[in-house]
Image (cartoon, rainbow, N blue to C red):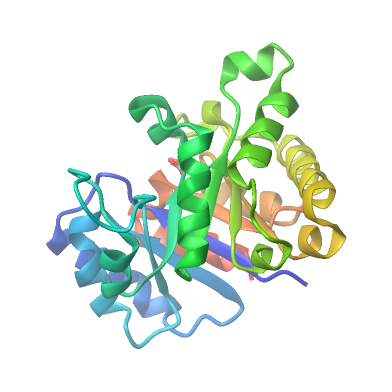
Length: 251
Ligand code: PEP
């Protein structure tokens, strides 16, 4: 039985003060939540403060990116060592906004995934098709390439640590959600690719989250699908009441 995981991607939102306030509100309800893994991913500037807020709880902290390199002349980047110093456990990698606006590609995303695993950080690898790709009937082709390339050279035993987030780009921040059937179909497809890559045990163990306008009103239905093991939440994660109710829908 896979434990569900709900992660909030706060993107480039929240000052330190606002982040602390949001984390404190979430903590009031979820500090002892054992049944679901809860992860908060604030911007880099608020990682330390949010880590402090949740330090004695079961809530984990994640970052929204990480360099594939250890240290050195990489202006603007952040390393695994720096993140671990701030008690970060998860790293979102290959988010569609990074692929779209910063031209991150599968090669670099894979290097980051490998580095994160090597350093005991848990990658949340994001994959998903654009609207044009879906309409052209290319969803499976696009997702398959992202999964195979993004998880290249990852050993079977690492699949208990990593998380895949299926995030149809057309559903992110648009208010449009994939139907439960559409999402389940792609999740099952991704699990099938992983089975082909590293075997049934790893495929059954890996958690695959859905992301794309998940909110309290649609969370329960999406999360009831057999291959949907959680959610990566953007907009609705910025409001404590909405985020908490999505976590409760996963119980
Ligand atoms: C995301 O960016 O990961 C996301 C799922 O955003 P939203 O929930 O706002 O669609």
